Image (cartoon, rainbow, N blue to C red; front, side, top):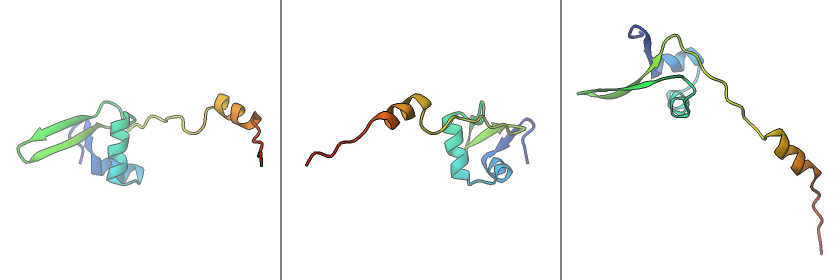
Length: 78
């Protein structure tokens, strides 16, 4: 149940269909927006802006790096 404009990690995990540890990784990466850590006498927990919006990050090898590695040839000298 969202706290007004905020949701918790387990809700975000259910929304995206991933584990809570993956949500923690996305929070650390900054992919879920301006998340805040709430500290209470019972412990701390993360709250995520609601509705959940995930930024997409580029993954893989950059085009420039790939072109350089494709043009290099390996010569075995025995």
